[in-house]
Image (cartoon, rainbow, N blue to C red; front, top):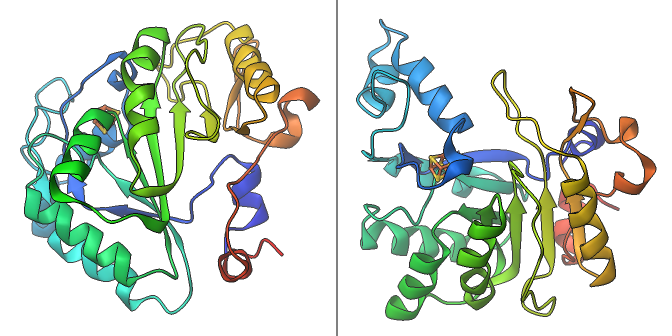
Length: 269
Ligand code: SF4
């Protein structure tokens, strides 16, 4: 069940499922990547061989991902062991260029066999995802939410078409986080991409932005009758996660439609 408290703090998933450790920064939104910071921190925790084996060698001396990745084979078994449905967010980028074909196929097999769960795949590489899905004929999954991540107009233009073309997922959407500038949702077809998630950057070195960019995204989703989830905002320098502390026009947490069983499992009834 997703607790009300968790949702009110902007989280639309219950558990992270880390299938890939490591990544290659690919656009301005990667600068303060949370996964990168966590990996670097954990790699410093000497003494625990399991932790070292998992995180060591994936970041450089400046704490940035160095392009190496590590496949977490054993994580594929975790959803199988759960009795009740869970909303899993898959970390890091499953469509990173170096993730082997066979591993992506096995992930699809696992998601297909575990329909009681919902899986969220987020990627900054929707083009690779679309081309991969076509080449390997990945089946459509009713329990898959596919979210392409963007952060500014240039990245929106580069990625939204590919997100809309990813036909192997029941839900397609875009995460605009950290939003770094004004984003006009040009070209979006709400029939092909129904959900927008928007949030500001978090963390100690977060980049401040003009909150009008968040309001503009919210207004555009309303005009196009799209689903919207406002994850975080900046209120004159204060980072706000708690939806009850946001202006009423941004107190929006829409989830995609799901069947009755998933709603029950998630505690949404
Ligand atoms: S693509 Fe995602 S996981 Fe990879 S560095 Fe960028 S933000 Fe981090």
